Length: 473
Length: 97
Image 1 (cartoon, rainbow over the protein chains, first blue to last red):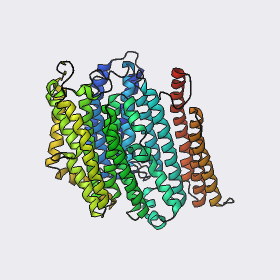
Image 2 (cartoon, chains in turn blue, cyan):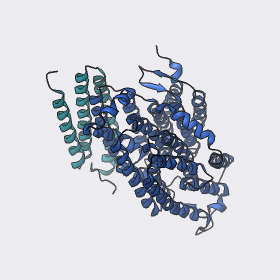
Image 3 (spheres, helix red, strand yellow):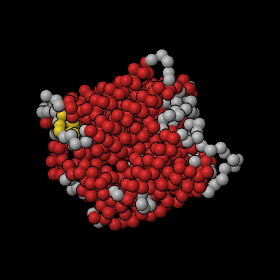
Image 4 (cartoon, one colour):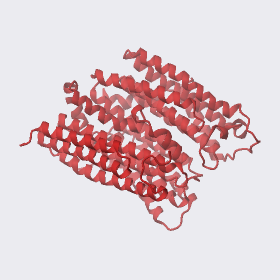
């Protein structure tokens, strides 16, 4: 007998998605109605996810695990969805008749990621990963008017489908040598056979799919193109919620090896270093803000990987904390640049000129968020970096942390370039004040408070992260 | 099991490499998609082989799910390629460069 009460968050989001499916079939499009509905339903969704945070249990023949880890990530994902829908009030880059479909795909993608973080069976991992990817391919394409959206989608689709095919083959190898598709059985069997080359190949092929989601080095080529071609809101969604889910599933899969594999750690260290360096060095020359944020998210994938590859409890909980920090900080950056590019076009440095006069609160939010991404105290980004780096030091990866610190300095340079554009550069012609309704001001103030407060009092969040990852020890 | 397990794995490896070659070397979107499908089928072979080796049904269920997921992937991909062809009149993966 399945205890459906454990599945209530997912059921809620499924019903929400069904509602938008019905809305998309109605003959008359109404952007305002869709926005209000989405906002209300996703706000309730956060409540539903929060209400279920203490649930525990297994359903669907033990293929689906509800524990602290999955529930914390479900709250993060529903928060991500809610925040993204908050900035969809002026969805000018997507045709109005497609708005219900846009929300439908957004909710389904979130639902798929929620299933992903609860998966403890290879089949559920594969199906949920595919479902979220298919939604994102279509979401990127929905900006039909833009000339780059098509080539961006093609690139995203081909790289994504290749990565998932490689991952599936890796899963097949693992299954064929372990004899079970349950992660718990794999954990028990794998350390004994992990020195066989074919098993290592299987693990790396499996990781390919997750690296694609997280945009780690060999699978990062789609990122700048997809962010550039997608509408701003979709780019923000890919940068926040999708990354959170990828970090979650990477922790689950890397925890499989039980910290016994030398090869695994070495290869992950290489990938982490290359991702950080490639991301930061490419970001320096970008003028398009979305491309800059794209490359910086490649770099951040590298930092998050440091926590995961430490393969100790501090590293896993640090990575969970880092996922939370990334969600808040990346969202705030996207929020500001989307508001600065009023017509839904791709924001560039020029759009930020004189932002401190046109809208002081947005400029302040950008300042705090960029300092957070660079890891300057007292922001949540500093605490996140501190946690993952100290976990790596515990494992004796001094060299890795040194390179990461050099990368942090490089990244500070281009974050400050953006701030220079916002605070010091004067616009060519005097621009009118940005229209900032009360809701935008409240959201900006809330994000600033969250970033700084979580930087000053991180202890509660750290405790939650530690409780979430306690299942892996 | 009449066919040895290692032969099944070698076969699936060869099929997988053929798929990779097709996906990487061709400059036509349909052929790339075909290569990706072959890669998925290679994984199905490995799953069914593993399932027979251990006398467990999980691998065969996996193969069924792969067939369904591959159909979904093809429908998304082909819909996309139809849009590409309508807009650019070609199926070259390097459009818009």
